[in-house]
Image (cartoon, rainbow, N blue to C red; front, side):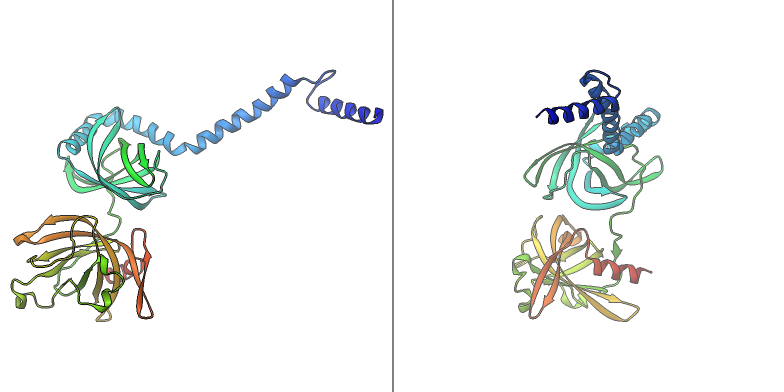
Length: 329
C-alpha cells in the first residue's frame, strides 16, 4: 500500500511540473490553460460553421446601404403584383430540389414573409439554407431579372410538410440566372409526340389506349380533343389540351399523368422514346378554350420484362437531359 501511494504521489508531482505547478495541484490554473485553448478553437469552429450566413449578412448590409432605394422598388413590385416565386434549394452553385411556389406578402426588417401556394414534401433542413427564387422575367432600369439567391430565415414544418416560410432579402435582385433546365420550344408539329394516361393507370397503361395524345395532322381532327406540346426540358414539359371535352383524366394541380414521350432526332432521323410519370404543377387557360398544363417529371419508367418499374428522379430525367443537350448542339 505504501508503495502504491508513493507511485501516485510521484505521478501527481510530474503532472504539476508539466503544467508549471510547484507544491499543490493548481486546479484553476489547469482550467484557465484548458479554456485558453478550447475557447479559440470553439470560436473558430462556430465562425466556420456559419461562414456562409455571416458573409451573406455582411454583404447584404453593404448592398442595402448602397442600393436601398432600388431594392425597395423591386420589393414593392413583388408584393403589389403578387409575383409567384418558384423556390428551390441552392447549394455549391447548383439548383437542387424544388421547395415550393410562393408569393411575397410583406417585406419588413430585411425579411420576406411568404404565402405558400404549392409546397413540396421535403426532409431538407431549411433553416439558414441557401435558396434560389425563379420568377417570370420582369424589367427594372432597362435590365431583365428572372431570379435571385437568398437564405431562409424562418421555417415551420409538420413532419415533411412545409407550413411557414420566411426568407432574408437578397444581396441583389439583378442576379440573372438561367432556369434549372433550358426549355426547348417545339416549333414543328410532330417533333415531340406525347401519349398520356391518368396516373392511376401507371401499372397498366401500356395495355390500354391513351386518354390523350398528340396527332400528326391536326387539320384532319377538327374539333376533336388532342394534345399539343409547347416546350420540353429535362425536368418537365408544357402542353395544351385542345378542345377539352368528354371524359378526361384528372387535370388539376397535384394530379399525375403517365407520359410516353417521343422526340425527333434530326441527326439520326429517328424518334427517341422516354416514359415518365409527371405531376401537374400548374393549370391555366389557353387560346380557344384550351387547357394549359405545366408538368414536372418525378419518375422515370423502366421496362422490365412485360411490366414497368418507376424510378424516382430528382429534378430531371438524366437520359432525357443528355439527349436534349445533344440535339441542341
